[in-house]
Image 1 (cartoon, rainbow, N blue to C red):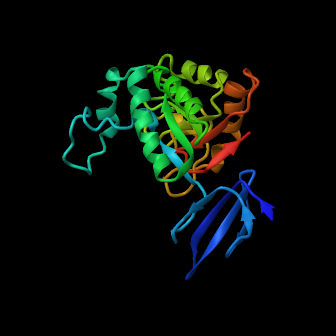
Image 2: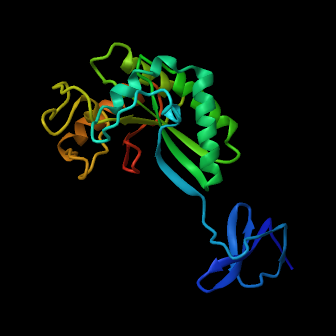
Image 3: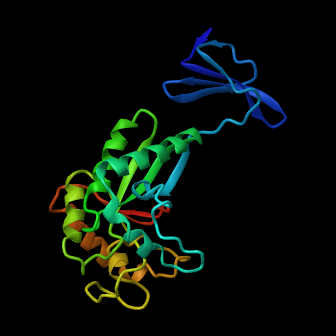
Length: 249
């Protein structure tokens, strides 16, 4: 009789049920009445899915609705300003506790892979990065967390902002992200009405967010490489909003 690591009995498929055999973390058998020996779990006719992927999250800012000023008009786009007004209340322990509570809810709902954005603007510093790095290590047994550091308040016109990104890259951050509300700047090739300072440095943009990618990709790839990768001897991805639209250089 075949020996497996786990058998999930009575998993739903169409109008019947099947058994799922797992060995070495890989599904090796799907069939009715699987003849094998292993610890068993009865799915009781429920749907069985691989682990879910959460491609865009903000663990460092989770669960702050109780401290952000209320905006009754949901059409007003002032969420960045309202969030910025409470960042002075963030501490390492506070961020970790809020992120931990949120992450555990994600685990209970089947998430096993997550890319989370982490702000490293000077007004919050590296608190979020440090808290999420510890959380990532503490929950590595259950979930793969990929940190994506980015600047919410601005890129080149905020003293200390760029240096924070460099520090995170040196400390192992694999992804640099960007946002869409930065001051217009002509530092990069093609800067103008279709793009902005921060976005040019994070080139993974596609139709649907109202910005152009192709005219800037070659220059931007070189900038990310020369600024963040080459000096630090690492590979860095650049991503916009963690939508799975990642460019690797």
